[in-house]
Image (tube, rainbow, N blue to C red; front, side, top):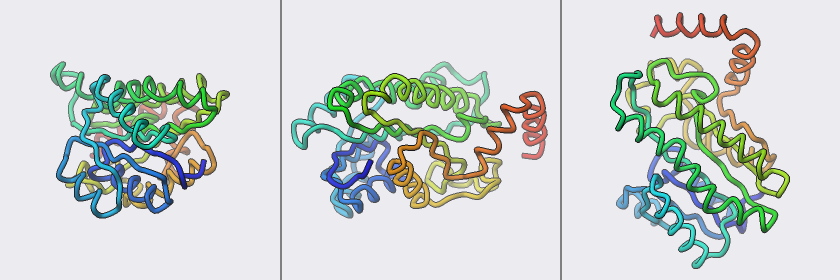
Length: 252
């Protein structure tokens, strides 16, 4: 899919990957880009700098996502692209509170579900649309420091797979973004951690990988090309891979 002339929604747009996607979509001459976040001040700054349309919304609230979609369609027409990108990275093991688990689940999984409920069937009825869900390389591999992040990002990848199976033959394209470390406010101070072992990418590089994947209609978006090799090693010998991950954890 080409972005020019399309209506796009980008969540988590106030900073990081979401901001870079918003700016890049505007540069690609999208008809309208709806920049969604809870940080109203940052959204207003982004809107002034690139012309995106700011909208404050809690993406973990299904009713608010539905209202967001309805308002966007009323003002700009059908949504062609929905980038469900909002996320957090909390470090914690299985003992963290249920509230922490629920926050990660609601943001990394249910936000994608809410978006799909609101737009996927409409896209399928038109025979065209694109869902880009941000997960992580941790959703294909693991995050050695965070159970909540690992589990919910795995679920995010699984849901994107299901969406592609369910809607792919009806014209809805699905991609899942799975980077390792990206230089964003979320990764500030973590440059020496294991996720950055293959380098910490700039957000514009990640945005470019998304635009290229959409043009090629590729499911897996891997800005760090090494991740594909790691996934193959994991599938080839799970026990050896787990042993290697334990050694990696001891190093970091």
